[in-house]
Image (cartoon, rainbow over all chains, first blue to last red):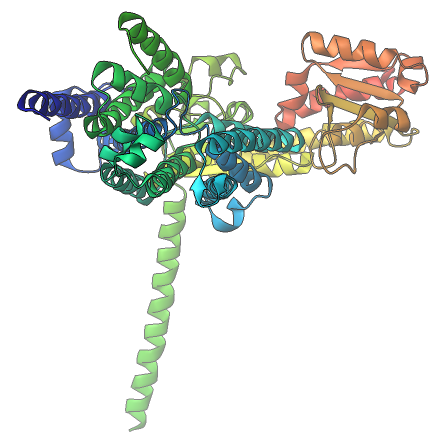
Length: 336
Length: 292
């Protein structure tokens, strides 16, 4: 990279980081109870006890932190998968991970496992379902020690269909209370009372980002095709496997904790590619921060637009994300 | 020496006596402390809201859900969401000391509120009318209205018994109670609505089913004499037409298919249950109420 592009990429990363901090601060102030930004420091200093402290630091702050982690993870997973498959329609849920997680949580709700294990049964069953799907997709696509990307996509889509049909079957035979529970989980939500789970999600998202950076040049090389990348000296098979596991693992954790929040992993990477760069060395971090910003904004809108009622955050990500993306695409000639 | 032993025993008796006195006083203090009842209550269910108004404790109710529309005064209270999804920020801002919810409330939200130290009591679905009355009395205990509650329950149970005595010696009618369509939903013996059928002198053909989902074929096979359909807008009229089209169905032959208002039968307090029961019993055994 020459001096000018080095400078340009640093500027982008700084801009995204600053935007992220601003969005987090603004989101902290907005809600059914408006708190002016100048009072936040005072409320924090006065410590727990006031209802404002509880609202800001026990309800809004965990949501914002979780939004940061999940938005970042989903966006990063989408970038990685779009890089490996070189297919613009690929997103974290295409590989059937959301279907597997939904099936896991459905079974947990119907068989009332949460009564014996507690509320942790939800993320555990979600992750178990996602993990089983990841293993299935991985093993179906492993032919003579090579990971065939075409068969991975097909296997993922098929498993996704099977899982959604099984979920619909379980919904048809469930009682109305269980049905409500299932539907609400599928709609996705950033509310999470367990602070350890939130910390774990943040930790795994940062680990995923660091791990993906070890392969940022490899992802750039994948752009010209697997055979050409191989001739450039990239360990194609090893890279594909590790990146697939990183992306699927990130997605699995996100879906297990927050349910299914769609469109973040599809829209944000494309948007960053149009606005910033195709170079994965900058794309990965900008995607992560862009996804975090996007999800925090959508969550803030979802909880304020028809206050005191809340919309599911997936509704807002779909509408805003889709519209913003079409606008960006129509303004610039882009090669995806 | 005997003096010393005597004095020692005296001291022991005094100590025991003092201890007993202290525990008695402490007991009284605790009893007096236990009598502080919640002053700021939030209700997360229309039935709980109605119950609070019934007990005359509505001045302590600071907020309820969008669906709490009965009695009319409840519509003017602060709204904090629905039965299943509430606005946590608003609830915390209102500083309640008691939240009354059903088991439909989101587990994560309940956990978050409990973490804040707010007292939450959740009531499961009532399986019988007796269960409903017990929950009503528990609620009254929580808010310090036990006497009013006992008075209301005694009076309501008296009416229920009166209705039952009018019909208990009459031949039991086979009844099908439909509360949903697509899929067809009825009530089994795990719902308090089964008591409508029992107390009005009927037999619920779906009593022993494990879930409320029932098949139309099973209804035809069991051939009920009366079908009740809870109102569902146009869907209930369509359902009535469907049932009337079966030529072998007893209820269709004798034109005993009735559409009843779903709100006043499905969402009831111990008192409104009696009104709903009276209407249903009059459909089932009109001959027992002709003297009125």
